[in-house]
Length: 196
Image (cartoon, rainbow, N blue to C red; front, side, top):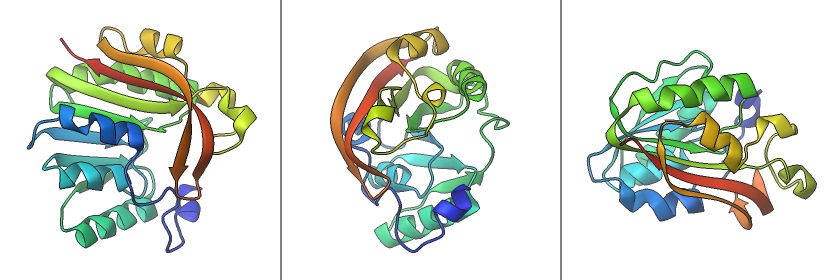
């Protein structure tokens, strides 16, 4: 499905980083090792690499990651890409300064299992940055999955990401303009968590 979606020459979600991630990017020190989940065509990973961050982008789509590598070359940076199903991907233990999840929408059981791995995968002091659609997004129809259960709420994240400490956690409706894939008002949840 995602290989087909990413098959054209254009970038479905654009080539500019997600606004929320961009606002949090200075939380990562230059040289930090950051994992980007469900990175697709690479816009966020490439932006972080431009900030001097050591980025690994993981996605199930070979086509998407090929475009991510092409975008990185065009911007004069390098990223590491890994093709993997997040239901089976090993995040490792204590190896990431940061993990980024931008509109990473998965079946609930896969998402919950993935979120449970985040704490172990982060180094002490490591950060988890997330923006996702809330179920109310179905009313806006401006992007995101067609199923409410694939979306997230602040309450769910508090449960799924324990024992991380939340530095930020908010729900809001905001305008999103990310290529043709996310265009218009979006119902989102945003979070920054730290491993103490």
